Length: 242
Ligand code: GLP
Image 1 (cartoon, rainbow, N blue to C red):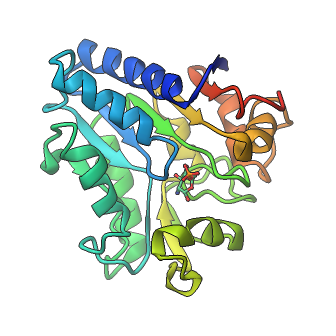
Image 2: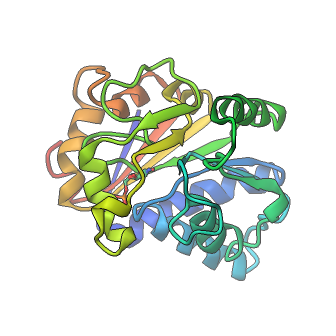
């Protein structure tokens, strides 16, 4: 695992954007693994700057989001489909027809999970997967106890994650869905490159357990230790317990 400690959050975003841009310059039809949450926002902003300056073109790239809430329609502003559309697809000039989010409102969720796996395989697999990390070590919505071999599936959100994400629902914990669809740890490990970004002291413990702790289903991020091309980009606060 490559660990890069940078002075601040802006430098983390710039470094992640530069790495993603390099992948797309080498392969304009690259498949990008997209993530939500606040951690990757600086990366998307820096990537948007590269797009506006004409230094990279994402119009032929494809995108697959990691996860989605179950039961929120895609039009709901809190859905990850809407979030990816407003923070990634539109500002980065991606083609909406090539960007997918797990269908959390499908009538048959299990079939939808299998179709999502097939769609990723059909696109040739993910070239670079951008990841944030939850304070409890989750990646995507793979909460502690997730199997390292897991595939896209329905999961119950951990109470801590629902509390952390209530801020996106006007602080109303009851409005946060109980379930989600998430790519599994096995799905994520299939990507050719992994890029985890973390900023701030609140992530320092999860980062230390991910990078230096033993492999453990209690720390889903520790699965990154199994990947041959995993890079972790940290600001000094997120790296403070290494
Ligand atoms: C969310 C997302 C994850 C994200 C994590 C951290 O629940 N499903 O993909 O990495 O929690 O979020 P944040 O970056 O806002 O701290």
